[in-house]
Image (cartoon, rainbow, N blue to C red):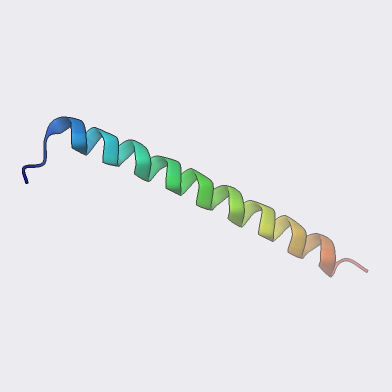
Length: 39
């Protein structure tokens, strides 16, 4: 199966979406952890 330019673009867009989603989850987890650490 040949990798075409369209497939590469789609993979890059999907990868960017995954990275954005992961960074959002990490930000939420860090915020919750900091809030819970407060007395």
